[in-house]
Image (cartoon, rainbow, N blue to C red):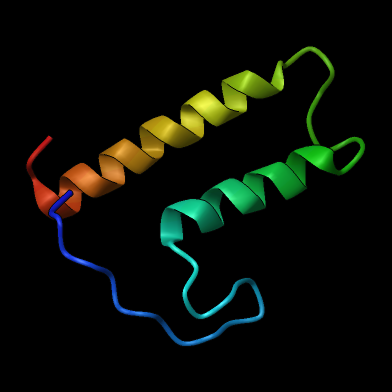
Amino acid sequence: MSGTAQKPEAATSEGTPSENVILQWQRVLTTTLRTPGVQPPTIISSRSFAMMYLAMCGAVNSCEGDY
């Protein structure tokens, strides 16, 4: 990622105007995993976080191309 600051985005029902997209992804996953019955008990929640972080890295790399 480059060192530039992000502009605040328009407020949505899912987040605050200044919420970083990465933090938004993490908030959504955490809320989802706290919902009973959403994830099978045989899957450890850390696996879901690992997959999300890999997706974040891929998204940043596709935009920035530096990683």
